[in-house]
Length: 84
Image (cartoon, rainbow, N blue to C red; front, side):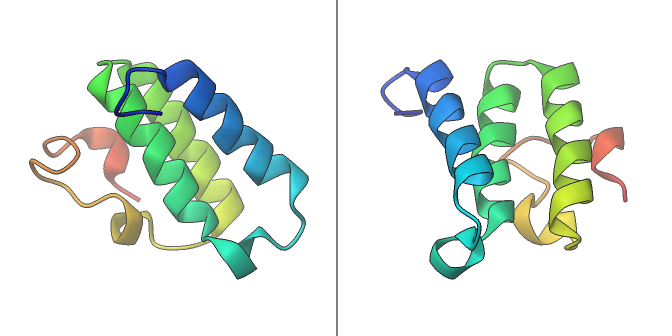
């Protein structure tokens, strides 16, 4: 959906996955879902939205966010809100 330009629907479905499935980690890592949403926000140049998602991701995953959000051309260049 992100690739087809239906980002809002894709983000809504990602949120539903995060909120509705108790053992979501069995199927997919929460960090991967957050990564999709952060990448979408960055692609839209919604930097405050991307930063907010990263903060939310830090609270909910407890993982090293650099594992999910590599810096560079893949997502976006080095940004201050990626620092842990």
